[in-house]
Length: 202
Image (cartoon, rainbow, N blue to C red; front, side):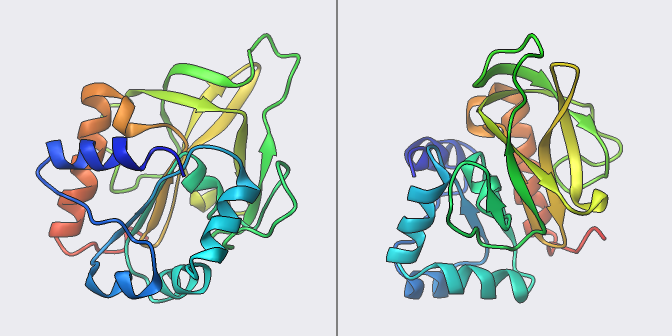
């Protein structure tokens, strides 16, 4: 949904080419998955249903295999979204809510913001600096469990979810592929984590 090419190009620059998954059988050759996305929640879920990928993605998560969501890909991991009526993948408990208006912030939230760590994860370990990354979104996840919240970003008078992590499933609301050196460093950490065995950080 939208940003597949830019994500593929970014990973190629990091020395890790990706293959596009279009059908369930394509998963057989994969060691880890990236679920990117730009656009609206319901059309994205319709695409996943049409391709037969919803149940295989849920099974992938149940088997604790590595998955990284990006932007809309983060939101699809949750159970529901205020943006639409379709059920999400339900890999993470909680929902997705529209960013609050009337807080002196423009919606969509567009531009650079600094991550604030909540719980360490492979992308943002305790010894890493809290980087500035690039956002474009109008909705943000509200994880049911505080332990799933890895990082937030300032928005208006409060914060918005920027990074979630549970087991071997993680996701960025921001666009690491558009976040210059900081984004490349985050994705490099994910690749190194995979190469080192993708141990469950929890």
